[in-house]
Length: 74
Image (cartoon, rainbow, N blue to C red):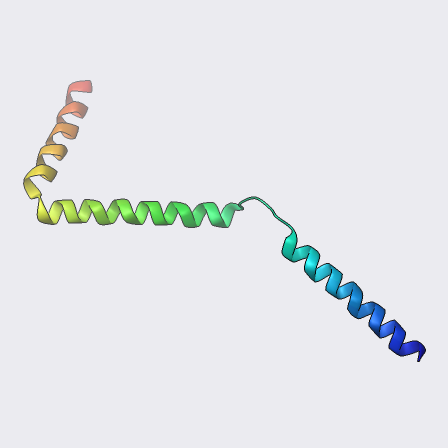
């Protein structure tokens, strides 16, 4: 009987720890920030590739303006 009560106490303690872990709120960690960055960069690359494919004249004009600005800065 003593062992059953001891086991029930252990189970109750584990339940309390599990519930405490579930309700514990923490901020973002590094992995979440890296995943968000990967998504944003992926979307930017996808938009850039689509822009180059479907609007090559616009892409070339933007590239020329960037390169012209770099050359004028030197």
